[in-house]
Image 1 (cartoon, one colour):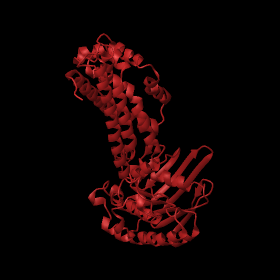
Image 2 (cartoon, rainbow over the protein chains, first blue to last red; image 1 turned 45 degrees about the horizontal axis):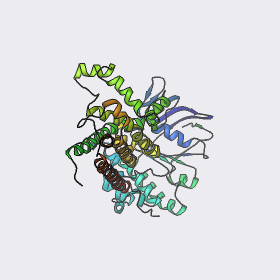
Image 3 (cartoon, each protein chain N blue to C red; image 1 turned 120 degrees about the vertical axis):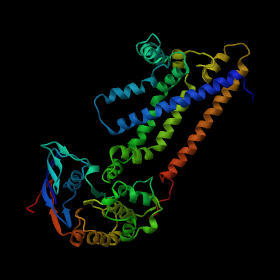
Image 4 (cartoon, rainbow over the protein chains, first blue to last red; image 1 turned 135 degrees about the vertical axis):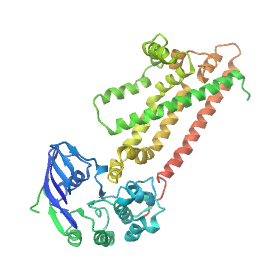
Length: 214
Length: 235
């Protein structure tokens, strides 16, 4: 489904990653500094690789030979950041609908009500991000990405900023998202407990290198 | 306190010139501030220096340069006059331009700072939600920079109200056309029995500046509330 072979260099850090990602949840694990977030940013279109290719199905997104590079906003990948990155000037509801408005009616896979129910965030709709707890914030961030109806969901350590108790609260939501939406997901984490609980497949990354036999 | 028609004229002209200069500086200042905060380009240092230049030069110098370039005999002014019949020198439109040039750096600085304080990852988050760069700018960057834009607009307006040197050099001191409050005060101090009028206009200037500060205070408060800055954090 997602196939990539990318090389990226900044300063003394060099990343080289080649893999194929199919349906279900693929975990990307490795020590911090291994380049997991950088790889995610390359896939999302927030960074541009020096060389390589990235395809989603038949859709070429990066090809440095033919100088193709589809910008982030046209890739239709959702990305959930470590710390949510909710828009502080918008209500929870407007945050949730931000990406939803960017999609045509026919492309939308979920309704606001479905996502509110799935993540149990209905009562938070009128609040501002500053009035949310860490766990609520991450659930809203996840809901916002889902309502964009992405064809691939990228999660960059979405639980890293939460304490153990909150992690245990959110993990079931992630599992529910996985089972009810069947969205392909690439999940960056350095915690095996999360990975064992969620992932169908594991890729390991070390010192900027990701090589997978498939 | 009653004003003579001449004093009224100076007040209205000042308000109009300052408002027009602010409106002129707003889009240009926001665009330039964003470029300076978010993009690296060749000659960025030079652009920065050029924008700041009016702040460190004696105001008469930019005014005189404007006259050389945009006067009816000047290369740009002559062309504008021949092609479009636009005359800037010794008109109130020229006063707007002189004020705008002098006040522009004061607009750019706070806006640039406001853009720099926005976490770029918020803009990235918007782009991963399908927002084009223009939409990211108008729905995320600009609203989040609103307090800086308001501060910049206020500084720009106030600086324009006080503009003296460049205005004098470029458009002169013509009653009803280019004689703004500071020029009127200056003129009144040079005629016999002008002290009372000069004092009235001085008080008026103070009132106008206070009003601008108050207005900006309330707008900033509203903007901050809108951005959720004053809300309590709950954990």
